[in-house]
Image 1 (cartoon, rainbow, N blue to C red):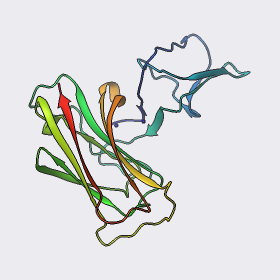
Image 2 (image 1 turned 135 degrees about the vertical axis):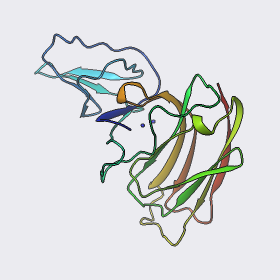
Image 3 (image 1 turned 180 degrees about the horizontal axis):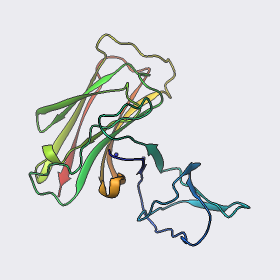
Image 4 (image 1 turned 90 degrees about the vertical axis):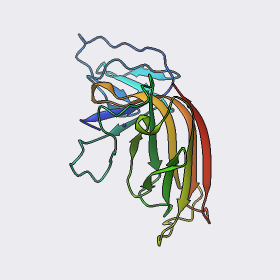
Length: 207
């Protein structure tokens, strides 16, 4: 469209791309170095080799984010996810909410996350990236995920409608210290120009 160590990939859609490890070259995804990361599938991408033999992958639907271990400070990214995540329903798939904003606190909104009529947590737009693992709160079958946005004493830092705060519900995996979002199920987006208390509910079938 994610915490334990180092660079983490937020991805969607798939076709395998293989780079020979015998080449003294680096691999870049959308301008960010991802050399050394494997077991990743890409789709709908452009590939360019530069004069040094480095591989440059252009994938508009893919994002690369830098993450840090829990308990450490980082002004550019954050996560609330833990590993391994509790999975009381024994779900075979992993479900996540991943946030993204144009810039921190740009909309002035905090979003309350409700799952199956139970309050889970408040997700602010002040953190450049937040990740919530959902399996702990889901049951097998249909689940209702609701977002309720409210400005609690804050105001938007922008009047540009292109400045947004997005919460994405996705299916992925978090093995090997990386989080890969393989399928985006739903998105809830708030604009800096929005007013009132935007809210929306989605139904997902957890398996």
